[in-house]
Length: 178
Ligand code: 5GP
Picture 1 (cartoon, protein in one colour):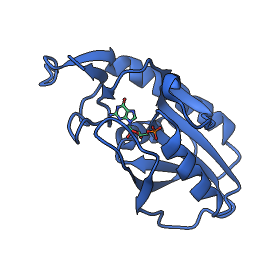
Picture 2 (cartoon, rainbow, N blue to C red; picture 1 turned 180 degrees about the horizontal axis):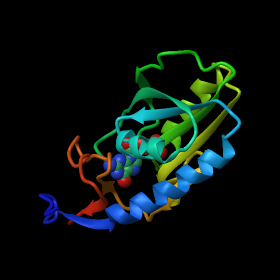
Picture 3 (cartoon, rainbow, N blue to C red; picture 1 turned 90 degrees about the vertical axis):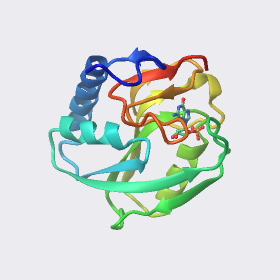
């Protein structure tokens, strides 16, 4: 693929690297949940490409759910004020939920999601995040399965946006000049 974005985005993780890591995460999740009913909870919108690939890398039955959240702030910073814009279609009481996140930056969004989910009495809640920026962590949140740890840079692609653009990049990168 030539890639319309190549002039503006510098690649951090290419398609092959992402696919290999997703396969490893899928294998670990399949092993850990082989005797459990798994609910894979995709947090919209950023996790949608990751969750779609991860679901196919998981070799056990699962139920797919979506949670829409909007985190207020400017284009590149989260404020920790989170609103649920789309809720689950079914209760999760007594079920094993794996939250699929695109990136944990300050941890404020995930902290809000986890505390909201816990009020619904699931059997367990774990987290699988594609990316983690430990430098900016404000809330300690558990990440049970992690794709890549990155420096304090603003990344786009593979679901991650900048003002709603760049989500459809097949790779993860940094916008040049930012
Ligand atoms: P947190 O609440 O952990 O600070 O941020 C979580 C959300 O902020 C992510 O789900 C994502 O939507 C957005 N975010 C944080 N860092 C980045 C980044 O480097 N790139 C993009 N595109 N979004 C980010």
